[in-house]
Image (cartoon, rainbow, N blue to C red):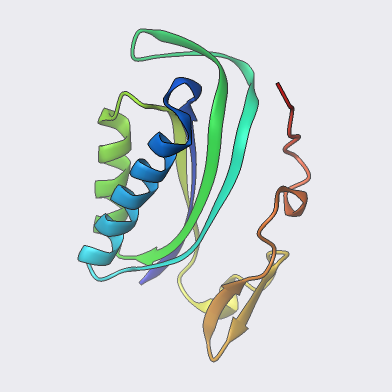
Length: 135
């Protein structure tokens, strides 16, 4: 199993229920294929760095969320394919954090408990490059 981080931007129009539906679908995909969802962090609505055109729509704002999960590379490819086809998704990226728990200890906010990665920081302050902008 490989440890991954998914950053996903969902269109603003759908509301928080749309984000929950997408996260639930992705989580069930991981679980059904033998993986583990470690953490889900909802960052809320943020202004995009630049206007993005996706699925014949223009987006200035988006709902950001992070999901940390362990899965096989085939599951990660299935999630990537699903997100590419979903018209509710503005942008997404899946980052491979590491193959073993000892390879990810250099990341701030990640520790291990009995050899399993544990993410301690669950707020946006753990990621200083992202600024929350209120409407």
